[in-house]
Image 1: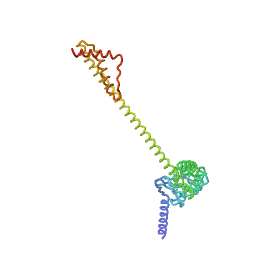
Image 2: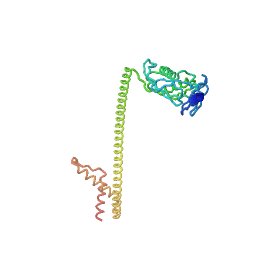
Image 3: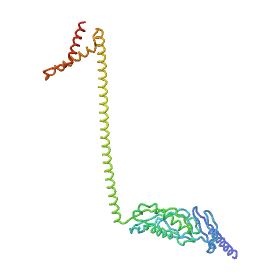
Length: 320
């Protein structure tokens, strides 16, 4: 009987030892860590893999964790990956006293688990409240139009302020993104009217610019056409003048050749070529004067006697 009781005690002790050993084995997943306290005091930080702790004496520190839906719960593991908090819309007053609703996304990462556990009581709530107050301060320094068009500036300011403030909590803020900026309905309607007016103004400007450019092109085209026409007339006149000059030159050359031939023929017969040519020209002139319808009386100049003498010479020439 004593052996049976002893066996039962040994079995119970063995089970307790196994349970104690199993409770002392902690398996930490990749990108996670655990804070171990020994008798209520920080002892060490467990890394990924199998770790041994002393049950009862050592315990994993519980921290407050925020779920994606915004609910908070307690856990003994700290996620070292980058996390994102999607905050609900909050009302923010701009510099020109316009109430605007803004919601933001915050991307951060825990880089020092010990600081995130002991330097702040409730890390998720602290980050949320700090983001909200910082957002109010940054937007409060800007007017509505600047707020709507300067998201990158707001994101940069928020990230710098939050990263500096959360540094002592062992948190690194990587970036902040503004999702929606929603001004009041009356302001939105006014902005829509302004945008419509701006579009109409730009359309009118483009139309006027188009008409102006068309008029410029038309005037340039007419100018170029007139220039081309004037250039064509100029070239035509030049060619005409050159043609007439060439014709006169050829005519003069022909007359010169004819005169030379006549002079040679007259000289061969022993007459004076000059008197012969003068007599011929004189006869042609008399013919033109006598052929006029209104010319009834013909007067011969005094020097005509010399020409008549030339005519006698022509008679003698032909007689030879």
